[in-house]
Image 1 (cartoon, rainbow over the protein chains, first blue to last red):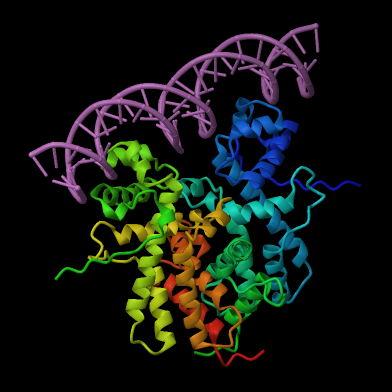
Image 2 (image 1 turned 30 degrees about the vertical axis):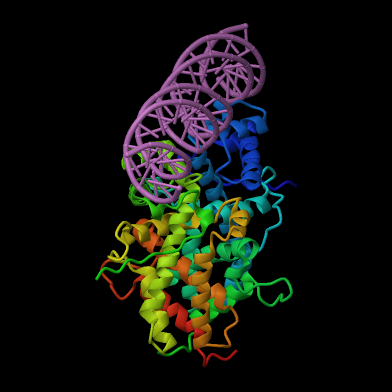
Length: 228
Length: 228
DNA sequence: TTTAAAAGATAGTATTACTATTATAATAGA
DNA sequence: TCTATTATAATAGTAATACTATCTTTTAAA
């Protein structure tokens, strides 16, 4: 039996649905590889077309521009991660265990999901760490937000916020804490690799990692017995 | 008596020191205005030259490219903010008071500093919120780091980490917490304005702001009486 | 078998991100 | 004061980017 995980994407993200053709899937696959290799700034539709073995014009039939393609990829990632979170916390009662699981999913380099053949989740995770925030740190953010392009990100954030409230219903900032955890998981990973002096992680001491930092932070913040 | 605040910048940031000529100062001033208005992606040296009333070639004599200019502006900002932190926490003994002051400085829109005539700190603060992370979220980060371009940012982070340790010498992640506080101050401000559903702040309830969220988070994390 | 849609091939444009050259204005030193 | 140096202006040009347009061929569904 083959299980195919189909992720339904917002129609506004593309001109033609890349999941519904071989060329479309190739475009996504090669985009992920190219952006991972050279970074988003150096990524162009011309290089992409060459890599895929098609023409620039054909790529433009799928995506308006490279920024939309990045949002597509990010939206796909957040949807997929949300699915992972639901799947891996399914049947778990204890919100502490659930939150720890989520921190691991956010921080740890994932292994490729066999259910989505043409997408390499491990590369995708790396891409989102470096390029993810560029999807919304633009002048167009409000327009794009109206088109619901960031819905998968918000849904995940909301999901995490609810688990936070499950653990501590009195906490005042569940959503801010959730978005903080998400972003910091990525930033601390990036810093560890490229600007290590901004962190306290080192090769020798495996007790200090982004995961332990985030767990420590999250559960100290949410401690119920805390009294002003 | 006139006080001029001169900030000594890393020589690698520019080809010709913009602080040492009228044209140079105008280039910085107009860069800040243009990036604030249209965003970094839409910002070009041609538009900048037009705005300044000079030629593209002249701008290129000061900065290698627009990315270096952004790093210059960011480095200036972090140096200036570090100075503000030192100045405003000077003579304060209590690390709690110092940390609260720092959170306010990171989160609150600043008023223009009269000591630096040609730079509008209020615009600069807004720019760093939206564009700041783009200075290092690139493929060139390691090279740029070798050139010490991020030193002002790291210095500030280190300074904050030391105050954190002053308050709680047993805390394991002072630097990670410091870089977290810095980035989250910006992100939560950005989210509040553009993607409010990622936060718990609203117009009506002034008791929930990025400042209260960060203070609450920081001091819960650093609580000394916390026992495993 | 027809026909509509997708993809390929090709061309073209405006803008961007530069580099190069020469002329002119400012200024600092002899 | 003259001269040498340096900064800036003016102009030109190039390769690459970010598209748009059009026309033909292939494919695959009715």
